[in-house]
Image 1 (cartoon, rainbow, N blue to C red):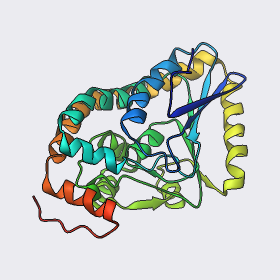
Image 2 (cartoon, helix red, strand yellow):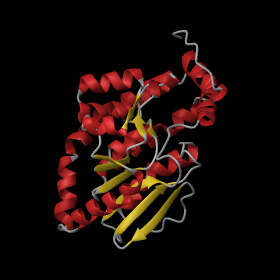
Image 3 (spheres, rainbow, N blue to C red):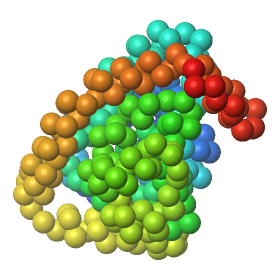
Image 4 (cartoon, rainbow, N blue to C red):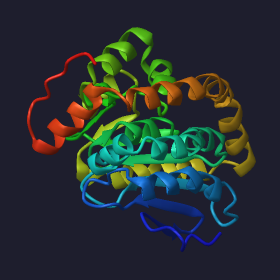
Length: 263
């Protein structure tokens, strides 16, 4: 598979391990380009004949800090931009859950919003113990429609998931381990060794037993995503039109506390 067309994602080969690095500025924010590339990268990885395992991480200070404020403003100004990416939003989730190859997520910095969803839909998640993960969609006046409502309740139960999704609070990765949300939170200097250890243990097993075990394990999540993603994206699209979403974007860009009106 030729990955040279990607602009915001980098690829490194380590034998039959493919390392995938999100690389879109220091915080790896999701803008139009990265969103579009995320909608096709997991399908391309699936069809890459030279790899059997994927390590997903961030190339910079964050794993993925969520949506870019300028892109959010562009979608407020022109809602047809949001409408145009609806299919891509669903494809990101579906292709993640349909990827047969095992994927280890190395959270090297904050993982927020869609960034957190992508991390949590990986198979094993190893994080820097000094960083955070969460889905703050509601703080931005947005519905958590890009997969958060699918994956969080399955990992931590509905009560805790609703607490986190409705408050938009971020969790330390140590807290996330305690909740069963992620596998390990370790000092930054130990992350890579743990990733390599787990990759080697998985790669020591027969390829098709591993792939198809993942496939059947993900079937329930795939069924759930098929039911939830259309209404999730639709509700998020509606929240894009609210005054409170505009206020949240304004406040974020102006580095102040938002003043919501309920509209």
